[in-house]
Image (cartoon, rainbow, N blue to C red; front, side, top):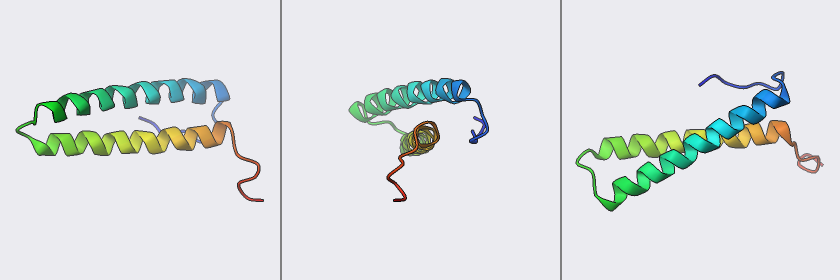
Amino acid sequence: MEPTDASDAPELMQARLVDLRTEHRDLDEAITRLTLTPPEDQLMLRRLKKRKLLIKDRISALERLLDPDPDEYA
């Protein structure tokens, strides 16, 4: 995944946001399935959770770029 900066077109950022949300949802489902039947490899579960958090951070950053809160720095 490539980092997105403020110079990207809003349409590209919106499309990226949709992709990230889809990946986040898919990871959430995979993590849920793995926790229902404990995996032999706990490392894989930790990596999936870490990836999910990274994606959540990217989603938040893109949302702030697309819709900055004018009261945030007031």
